[in-house]
Image 1: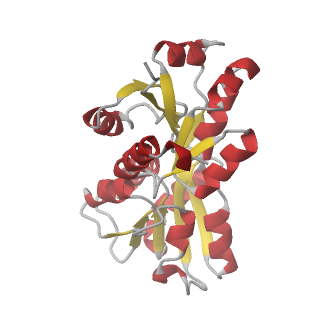
Image 2: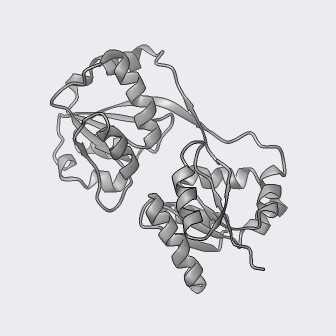
Image 3: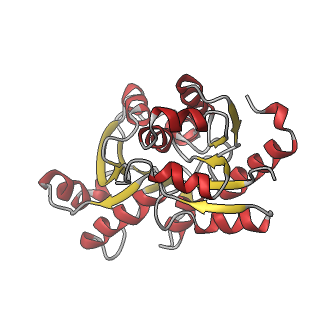
Length: 258
């Protein structure tokens, strides 16, 4: 029988809906987070000052659902009533939906749900002299901030969580994948891809190179190709619906994976 199990790699607590969608589509699912999310305390004076000065910014950007959860926990310590007149942004649908739960009007990219998509919004084309606060994990991707600075904005960061590679024993990930007969891996970021490689020995890695990888963007796909993966399917974005659709399309048309 052909291997038909799917490895879902989202952080703990972030993969349940995706796994349910996959099971409803007839897939067998193995969940193994490849990124651990660790919220940070609001302990640095510069971070506290930025939260206190929230009403001085024109634009507040959340790069992920983790950024919303951890960042809003910080903000609510000082702002039980959120300031008016601030423009709120989210990179993806899940982040926008979570921010909307606070009663906020949230702007987001409609198609490309990444830094490039957000930077293409009309509100960020003329930002000379405007203040932007980007809420993200420690050491996040620099493109958004650097581009806004080039456009004349004053950019600050709230780094409210850390990402870490899971602490798995040598051989554990490969053994779990083998027992579950995994043939496809869904990866939500380049960091998850790098952690997949890090958690496999050279021999184990060779066994995975021919598995199907479903990826959220061409940028991550380019990284996968550079690492030697051969069967790639790029989803329209990182939403559950797009990732499941990409997987099912790849299974219907295996010759298209490249």
